[in-house]
Length: 408
Image (cartoon, rainbow, N blue to C red; front, side):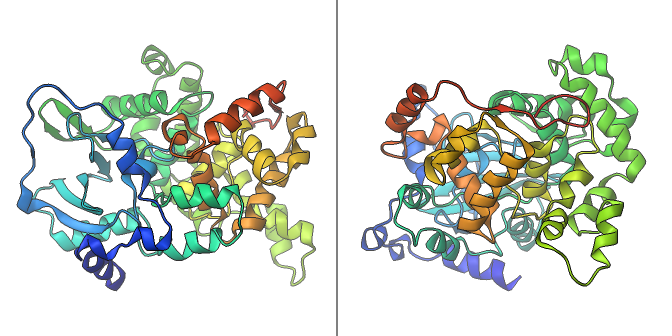
């Protein structure tokens, strides 16, 4: 609680205390991104929410809503249709509005409307990991003078969200061969079809994510295919039943707490001395515990581990991340023709060597910087990407097999 109070106190200070020019640091990306969005010609009231109901949460140096909520790690938030610096989203069974104004992130709890302010602060502080100061992390990551430092400085404010494990698992099963907008659409359909309606306002409906038992009992492949899930429909149906049989959310929480390991790893843990290879086996044991699910390969397992299971060393690797590693960390990786399990680990180890112990967080910042929505915020990156595309005949083909037989 003391950390939350300190954040709110800091957020309430005069924004002039943030002297970016003296530190050589640019403003958070969100303001440049928001400014790029065209304004509406129709007259809109300046505020739809009660001004007195907004509570300061933290500074935008600690949390950029655009970078954090629109970078492909979470799919439950949406921008307000008319107020471009306001986001609406569901956390558990609560509906929150977030607003950026004068370098401060404020919040309102829309449902339940009588939620005590302290509980709202605690909920969002936990969700956005505000117990961890971002400033020292970004300072440590940027001690080396290279292009990654430039990117990291310009992308300040991106945080790793602490998501509900069940929602995170099914969200990233939907992510296979997909883009952010379509993933969010699928998650919205899952919630609207099987979740509980908890709040509605001006035609907007907000649903809680369905429980494992609900998904296992009600999800049908034919229905999901009709809703546009394609081949992912079978993965969702099978995973829901698998997870229910394994104990539901308790199974995922046990992975988070390091309680579930494969038998051979459990045997090694009893040994007082471990070879380096054995330590790496323990290090990645959570991958195998997650890859038992249909539609979950190494990348999806690492996404779920990073964004919901406290595995901050997890590095989700796809061709996009491989290209970042080739460009920024080790050019010899470009000689690899496919992302084999060995290459997958090599790429992850490069990020861990540079950014540990919060390597997954730094990886997500660099990943977001390469997304088209944010790429223009990083001078020179667009031109560099074009050169890379011309120089590279083909990206490596992922060969990591999922246990369902498909590729990730």
